[in-house]
Image 1 (cartoon, rainbow, N blue to C red):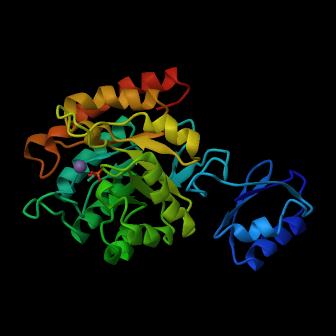
Image 2 (image 1 turned 30 degrees about the horizontal axis):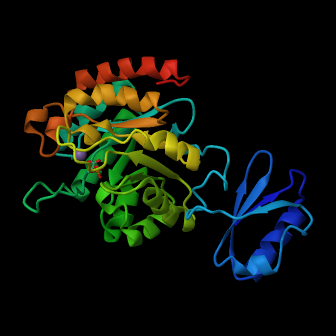
Image 3 (image 1 turned 90 degrees about the horizontal axis):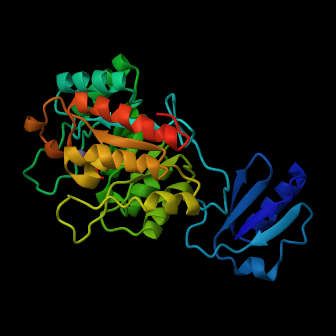
Length: 337
Ligand code: PEP
Ligand code: MN
């Protein structure tokens, strides 16, 4: 249920509505817009059907939300959210690019990559210290050592850091070093992890699960908002399909669909979405054309020897080309890169 207040509703009237909702054993979530305040009501809504709220002064209308998610919905917050990560603002006219290696392998390669991607215009440095690998025998990441490199290199290059959290036991460790917490595709429905990052003060980058529908994706984000953390950015990174020419099928439909259904920003990851470096540029352009608020791109100074995702990693020079080419598309759709 969503309660839309009148544009001239007073603070006292708004507080009264909040008190009534709380008294009915429901949870009010307040969204203050520039024009009016909207209150989302979480919990069994039958109570509200018995005690109508339309009659309370200051209330304009009470609308049932037919969708299974509430806080992430456009109904709850009609204006798009802009999520701040360091100096970067994700969801505004300026597109935000997160770039870096798949895994942090050592300090030197990270520094070399970070300098190159920063120079080309990326604002956020990405790199995994905890890696979700299909095989237990593959490189699993450097753990805290990797987090330290990320922080050090970000400091030197004046960038922010996004890195993956896989386990609730590592939350405070990752929070100490990262500016944004990534929840990977394989953990999109790890509900306990979602609840924990929902209580964190750090913004969250939530990647779409390999076989998650858009509704499931939005419900996963709802878990984080429900715990009070509204700083969530969604990432379309490709889904499983019958197609085997590419690693995944980048579902660019998700961009306009999510924009319609939700106020949260959406970025596109053409690196994992295609699995091949030579498809990354065209799909980055396509993502921006579809309305994405940014990109996540894997870059490695020597992809041949990368410990993970070498085939989809761009050389720094190719990344710089991608930034230039994609900027043209951004301009054509009224955005800036
Ligand atoms: C990654 O960003 O390196 C990663 C593992 O992504 P995903 O969770 O989308 O596979
Ligand atoms: Mn990767």
